Image 1 (cartoon, rainbow, N blue to C red):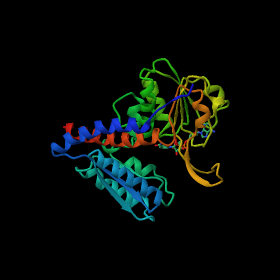
Image 2: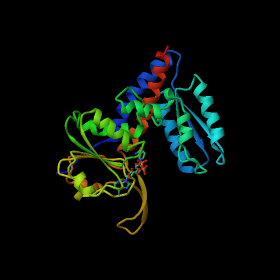
Image 3: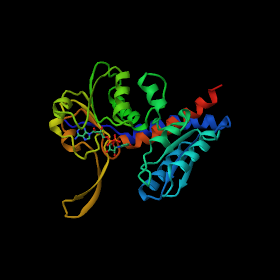
Image 4: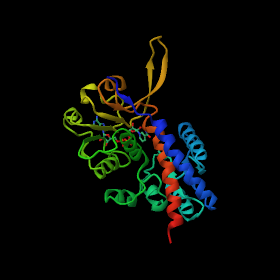
Length: 293
Ligand code: NAD
């Protein structure tokens, strides 16, 4: 049996419809939601990602302000920019495109973003609230992977979930979301001794290891639901001998799709849902700001 393909574009479209409705209401009330994105440097890939973000935001009725800074910018002007956006009442959410061009550590810059505008959910306050099971702005990729799982398994109570990866923006927050949904969670990482033994016990398997093709059929039990967060641009040799650049995930799609119950493709899985979650966090931040005393 071939696995159901979890359609990230369709899930993202549903999220964006809800976002668009809420954005319209906010705009009619005189408070259009606005996402500010900071892009330091002129990396072509980052700029093209920002442009596609802008297009998705505008489709959903969210204003988008791209703040461009030179590639030699240091942390201090970046922090000044964040302070200005924090203080600007017309800005609902702030996100920072990474990596920073000089290779600077983004930590101190990201932590400067006001918690109420931290729509990537990368600040200590939102991550702490998530861990405490409180209302938080959840990191978009983790929220997106969770949404993909939930689209096929609405009730995760008691199910064995395995997360491969423990990064602050994906693996860890995802484990928190799964715990809150009453799954039994195992977290694997680069020092896990027998990865396969763990992943084979999973009914729900989410892979965010950043390693192309890491997970194959031998890692997956029949009937598991597999969500692949990895994205890698690789050069492959086609049957006709032509080299092509393709986007692949951490999961070997064809072999895993032949035994899993459901699986996200790459591209077209978690990726589009991540952008939709960023927009959802932005309308949410805008609504909360208006509701605040
Ligand atoms: P990261 O490099 O910060 O973290 C990778 C994690 O995987 C680490 O915790 C590490 O311990 C673990 N790991 C690495 N190799 C492993 C192995 N062989 N076995 C077990 N665990 C291993 O990466 P990240 O930021 O969490 O991103 C993960 C992947 O997701 C990347 O491919 C990235 O491009 C992709 N990504 C996709 C989206 C999206 O929207 N689809 C967003 C962010 C990141």
